Image (cartoon, rainbow, N blue to C red; front, top):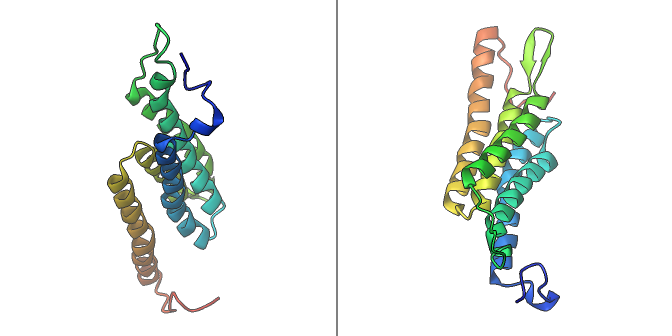
Length: 171
């Protein structure tokens, strides 16, 4: 009996594998959109970081869903609890996001970037599970929050400080 670990290379790339590859690409693209906004705002955790977080989350969840199939020929098949996989991914991303947040000169910096990393991880996890519409909707909603509310916050700060300069004026 041939198991998934010893398949010939020619048959190793089935329709299921192509689906997994597309999910990884999707997680990279949609997690990357969040990172692109952070990159445009000149934050250190930008495009590449968000792509890697989203890609990693997708890869972990895809692998966890494949373990039972890989070990199906064995009598002592492992049982995978998807909630524990999601919990582990969430904790790992939260650890990274917490490392972005720091206190400087009386203010907290990096909260939005840390939250963006967390969102990228969730997008990767969602798309990795094949829940495309949910992952894409979350990406769009996240971009609305990052772009649109950034403008609202900027205008609010200008009103409170009394500055009359236009936000689109180059420095």
